[in-house]
Image: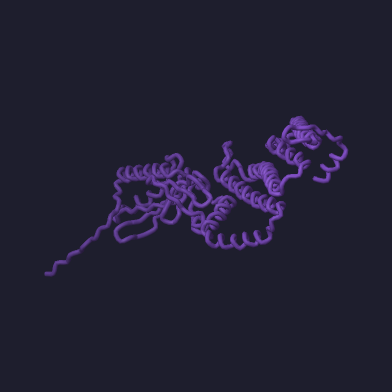
Length: 368
């Protein structure tokens, strides 16, 4: 760059003028630097405007959204960045102190790296949005779990890009980065051991996103605890229990425990048992299966699977009834079961059948 400036000055005529307090000054370098600064700034702006206008024209003829991402990326280029680059190039016509030269170089490199990272993040965010953020329910809204994973990927990409960018800037400033990279590697291992719990939760959040055992809004049971999933974070998942409090569970625990997801239930199955007294006439005992079947025929949203007289218990004749409620809602399930119980009580009252309860009969023998 300096040799190019020297060659350019060799072709320029001397522009010497007498300036008070400074004596005779050659203004050729200042004129060249000013012209180069203005020319480069205008050139960068014109090229950027022409490229953007051309891309916007072409994007109207395509159905893909990739060109829109390219337009957004180019639009993110800040005017102060290419103005700073033009100013830095123009300063090569002057012999600056080494410390000032290194400072300007560091500032320009940092600005260029920052701008490149911003452009790269446009494509990273597009990829994360395209492949991670999905409408799982078909309701037109992005699943919150997918949005969390997308933001996490973007955050990791930003950290990685900045790490490489800083190493690039230091390397171009003449700083030895080999030992720095080695030190960061050792430090990274130490940090990984210290934060292994946090990292396990972090990777568990990716596992939850990929496997999708549950989503926000699902009602799950985790051991002795249960609740509705309200948020799936980077480290923890938060549930709202039936009592109303918030339950915070680590993601690592969720991926290693047995989780019951009631939201994925399409219908509920119930197995109930009732008993009648031994004094019930044999003919009426035989009619009970038909009575139960007719009750379920009249209950909307419920269907009978089977009913059988199964056991001669100590103080009752036991019947097993298995039925399904065609709704996953627990309240609806209880309504149907309650309706069956009331109907069965009414039918048994009409037929003169008594429900059994624990009794014991004593036979006393009187000796003469």
